[in-house]
Amino acid sequence: MKTAMPFVSQETDFMQELDKTIAKVERFVGLLQQVKELSQSDLGLADAEVYLTAKDIAEQFGCDIKSARKYMDRADFPVIECGTKKVNRLAFLEYNMHRQVKED
Image 1 (spheres, helix red, strand yellow):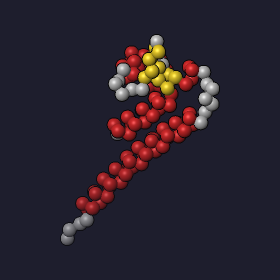
Image 2 (cartoon, rainbow, N blue to C red):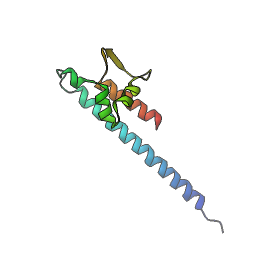
Image 3 (cartoon, rainbow, N blue to C red):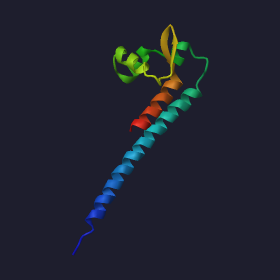
Image 4 (spheres, rainbow, N blue to C red):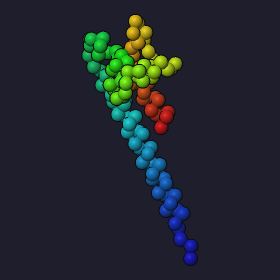
């Protein structure tokens, strides 16, 4: 008598993939919530709070400033050069949101 074990294996694989997809969606929703909160925040903030420097990005990622600058040097990174390289906080969150979804 044959057993239905291959179906159990397929169902387990499906459930694992579903769990991974749900985790990705939850991360994406969390990033969207951050963007929404920032976009609704007071636009009268000081420049230091609206724009991030390499130091701020290094703190965000937990890396050194040299690595943060290398990250900011990517061709598609939304950097603003005005003496020093800076990035708008919302543009930074959106950029990382798209990279995280694409790379996962």
